[in-house]
Image (cartoon, rainbow, N blue to C red; front, side, top):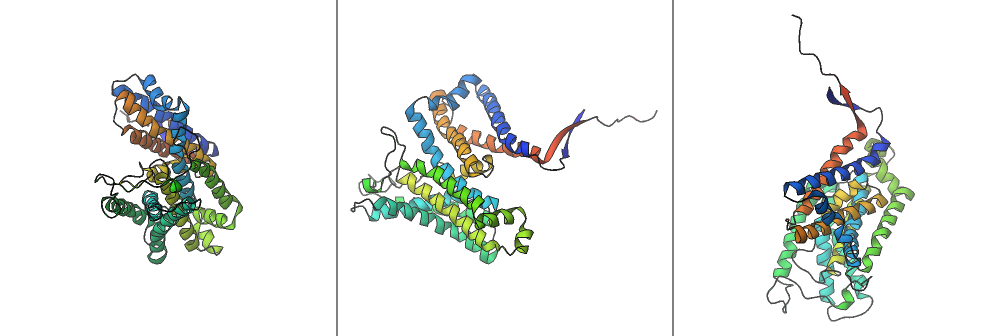
Length: 360
């Protein structure tokens, strides 16, 4: 018997929802084999990775803290992906949002007032949106591929942040470490749960998801995004110009990534440092597709991927494995998701092998 893939008459709606669950199950099973290969008992190791971080209130708060930027970025990126606009530069846009908000926070160092924090957050949104405007302009004006331009700009943003904290914005009280001054209380996110680092920004993730859902399902712009994404020819025939969709989705994604960056430096970090993100901009792409590009599905996917961050920390401390196990699990989720997505359009069939023997 041989396995072969047979094209379905129409895409399977059931597999559209089953595929992510199957990918997660395969990731957990493969993760168990990975731990076994490293010399650990699979079930206790998986318990350390997936369950032990959620054993107390502080662990749950850290889980939600990690899920917040992932969800905000992924929901915004999904709008572009629905319209065939591929923003791969959320990591750089997050960094530039952190830089813009950090610059305003430092400029207002000696100022206090309730208006300081909103101003800092708005600066972060503007910084990320303007940075995303670069690949948007290049795509609209010169038809440059936004995948390449947005991806390359990530490295520019990283180096720009490093130059700032090593140079003009380095703290005079920082003992020559590459970091800015600590932000004042007026520029810091209020804590949501006392004794934890969870701040009020966690409430923005479901709000952003709701806004994205309204745009997609209740607005003419959302209708344009979906039509251009599914059938560009039909969009052109209807008079839907792609320029508006490109500009909006890229800059909205950049603005939300910038907001996530602002909340990181005004929240758990409290200052500008060379690394303000563990890779949220890249992991958010996985979250967007694992959530099927649906805003509320992305919220659930972000919770799962946030668990890989704190699970990786727990596994490093308890089991002594490298922190890179986080990226391994995230990579496996993406790999198995792409593999399982084949079953949406194809079904597996068993067929008899053709006979190799001939007539005597």
